[in-house]
Image 1 (cartoon, helix red, strand yellow):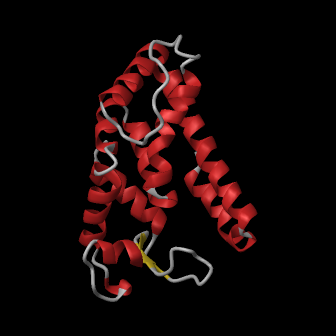
Image 2 (image 1 turned 120 degrees about the horizontal axis):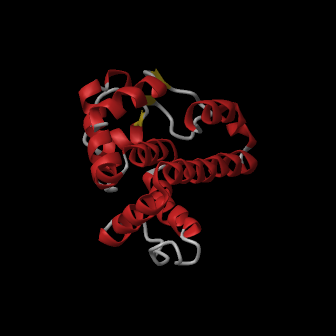
Length: 180
């Protein structure tokens, strides 16, 4: 798949304008928070954020900058999962996930690649490790990798709610719509 297809699905999940006082992201439209919109130069009312501006922010900040586009060349399913996690949990949380997951799945370096440095940088070492893992484990391995990424994301939601019970109102939706 390509980024435009991912964005269509993502924006369907995110919806239009929302300003729930309990949402730590504040006012959002298409899943873009006001803080992110301002950082990317949008000065208007969040209710008026144009769809093309939201998509541009997603492409730049949540796809290209964290290099999920490079993962997409190797595995579209993994790239889409990382994009979704980055949007919902922040790219700072999402970027190291692939490295952490691959380290857990490499059987202490016996699976064809050594442990990766957990730095959230998707350079040739990380991308080659993903290629090696998928070459060894195939489609079943890809499903397992996705499951590990989802487990990590789900654990993040649990931690958020345990730290701040007011966030429990979002928990069901996070699990229903983000963990698959």
